[in-house]
Image (cartoon, rainbow, N blue to C red; front, side, top):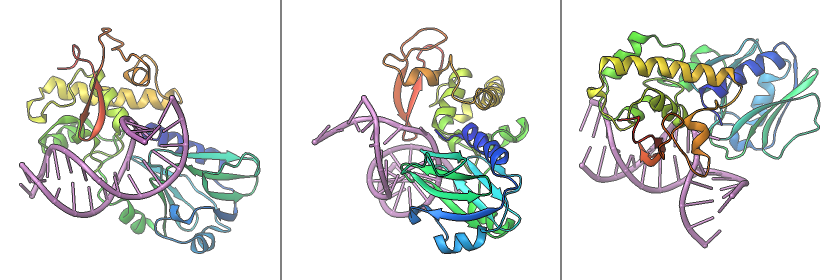
Length: 256
DNA sequence: TCAGTTGTTTATAT
DNA sequence: AATATAAACAACTG
């Protein structure tokens, strides 16, 4: 589930439900999900604090409070849930933040990703490491420049979080399909037109995906899960292959 | 039983 | 130096 658009929705979700409410207690049902702190330290750090407007960079959600910040990464199966009370809790709710008027739950089945605690902006920056500019914020020029300094195949470059933050496997496939570019094309051989299409389609994919509150229809994405994946544009059977170690779908006639 | 899964990090090879 | 590949992490589904 979580790619950049999903994390952006989590960001808005946290802002809508949790901002401003005093945190009364922190329940950790799986301490392994805390990557740089303990349940005790997390409780001490957050109790009595209130979330402020959260930030997102790539697939990271940075939830500032009037004290420290809580950093969320959702891995492949993370989710954020709001509950008015304890009913509806799930066994994969690894951390539950109880606050006035409800509770925020960090759910994560596979436990890739996790929660980090940062006491200030410097610490938050250290956790995020050398993350590139956010894929939705980056300008056309910088996108082009950063890509131009890379060699090799286009898809793994798009997914490199140091180059550009937020593009995952599904967004990459969708973008390349819409831009009609083969995921294995070498970056050096992309034309100016293709660079422009890539930038435009990346933004279009991210924006529609955020806007629809879920994965878009009439897309490669909708096809790949089905029994007979076909190109929504030309009807050709989609090809499935490994690119950069990830399952990749492409259209044999539209993408060259 | 086996293959597959939206992400990232690490080690190893080229 | 940078890119490519595979494995590991972990838990579940079909």
